[in-house]
Figure: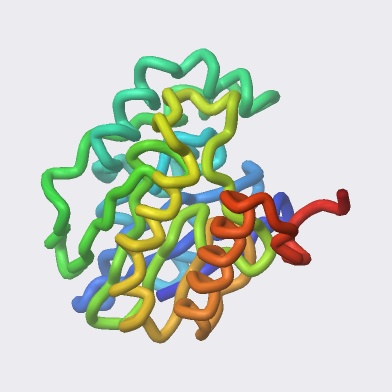
Length: 234
């Protein structure tokens, strides 16, 4: 496993190296163009080839790509692939200034062929739920004990049940959907040695992070002050 952290929003890029030591799965490459190019160069220097890509959800900063990664298949949940296609103008507008030649690569994902990927030496399990955004998907790497959580279980970012300007429709009860997402992640967090959030720092405390997020949600639902330093000052 390799992780790069962007200077923008502490966004992480995760590389799952296959058992053959050559092929890799690239998850949520981000953020700035020079950083994407640098990641591509680093993989080449290590003798690694991107044979598949994965986007954890349909927010613009998780739908990026670079020619240096090649033309490997790029997957996501069906509920991520649909807005990535249908809401493309809104996604590009959120992205802002971006090189014209890279625009066709943004959001070019298709639905994953199942909840497990066995691809050229890479073996992972996909955990789909509706926390943060419908179709959000975490990636469990059982052979390494690593949980790639997408925009959840962050040490710097509080739970974000739903963003009003997101390209997908909100669940009927966003807080309940987020709580259900934490429940879906819980058995994997308990088994994980390391958790990698979409924004923040990889940590050896996945269960503690999940408990902290659950407490914050419970406080919000009951109208109590969650006393969480990840929240902006009142």
